[in-house]
Length: 493
Image (cartoon, rainbow, N blue to C red; front, side, top):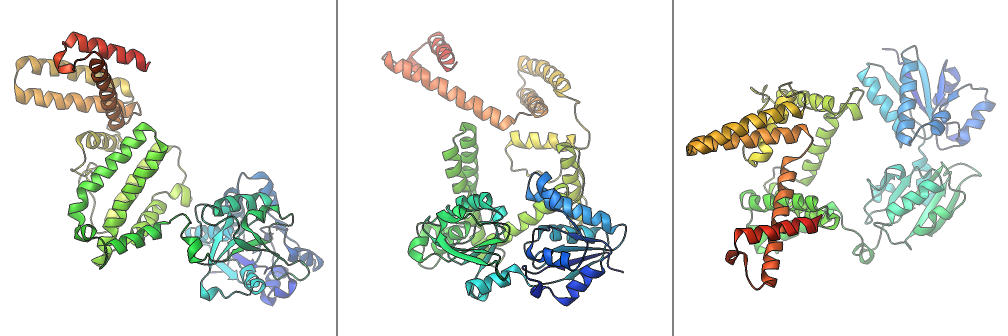
């Protein structure tokens, strides 16, 4: 197949770094696009009378860089559908070039051939300016994607795409989470460009005070010494190492005795404690309880690692791949109208995954809901599953009529005194109420938890007031307790 898109690297900025084959591709292009004309080699290209169209307009109109790169990729792919195009980017096409990543992915989906012409990366020039050997250990992180991708301070790191002082300020704030403010870092601008290269070693807190920071700027962070690292925020890797030590030969006897089954009650308990913290809207407690829950996940992963089955990295990799696969409307080109369509696509993708995994098609859309779930949550999930194939009320009103119908049948069962019938109708009543909650967007588990907590709060009020009166609820009449209950309701309002 004839190449439809040729992606050319322009090198770090000097015309001497532009390979001859790349220059020929630029000169012979019938349609040449540049990601940006704000690059040192572009003026030289103009002198060679090479015509091009740049995408700098998108940097002014788009809301963020992700949108910029998406617009650029869409433009290049649309042009390629009409004939061969050349797309040129600074440095190496596969180094810190998000637009190229998008083009490669979507071109494969559209069966468009892509030819890559590499050039010297700005990282190569940066290594020379810093006099460092990346083989000895070096991380490269995107300054536009911090704090999500914070580096490990124990290893040297390069932060790329520090576009301007505003980005430098954001990068600084993110890095201060793991590095001390006085940590000496090296700021490099226009590495490898004769006459324009600039290098400065400054404390981390000063990087956004440099008035020469621009789109050609990168940041190098030397590794922290052990004494300094001990004061930094811990990472997931640290927790994994701690758990491995607890389970190790000289670790904790209790931790070493546990297995997946003995830990099950703790996993369930920690899950409910997270739910309680969320219900209380206590952010500090949510953070703490999520940590306790994460510990259980790491604990199970460590046991599996010792058994040679999987480790925490397999867990993270698996869920990451699943989230990307099940969100083609975010990581691919699939359009969706609303969240309802997202859920329908989600179920379709899950069915395809089951087929590919050899599990075959499920016999029922209700399959896959764990029987061990609490009944309230299981009922909600079953109703939601049935709704996805159209078995549902148009809105809550139909479900509310069903509640009234079930209430009448419940009353009849109670009057009959038949235990089995009472139990059956009680279940139907609860199921119908959960359906109304679902259709009104209310989480029935959260609603019931809130009601239980409210009851506990008001009953404790009764106990406190009774104690002030020199008595206790067991010695009070129902009327007296009811009066205190009503008082508690008024005080809450």
